[in-house]
Length: 219
Image 1: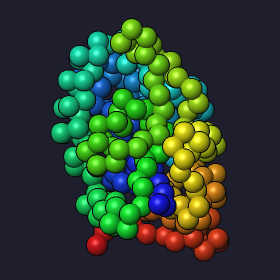
Image 2: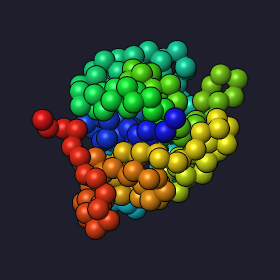
Image 3: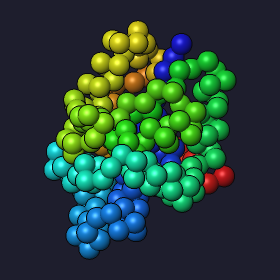
């Protein structure tokens, strides 16, 4: 059984769920609006430019999880799914997932967005296996810290290798779909790298290396 691995934000989704969650928190009055929006936009730009300090970003992004009760966070997330995520879900992305299921491939989403945000999205897409940044929890409350290695850049490889060892899957014949230059380390490791609506750096690299380039945005 071959693996079909998918990035999430701007690959299966027409947008960034992590950045959108930050905007949603601003709308709910859950954070200091001006400061949070400014920092959220700055970190998002750094991610797109390939210059993100993941540790600094996670201190920022996970802080609201520690500041609010789980019940409130879960209620907000249900609203977030309906108002923000459903419009982002790409029909052609769902079709691509279905094609790999029909081939008998094993589906896996791997993302640099945290599991609180992305777990329900993976479930909505019908993908059982998810590798995401793990927010630490103690006694049922988020602490604002990360548990384990963040699944970002080379960290995606480390976390994937851990998952492979635990599950018995292998990368032989594996596919990986991503939009981002930040995923070049993992794209270089698979037999079938696919650039999906790629950023300029990834598009140039994909063309230089004869990787497949596809769009899930337009018919």
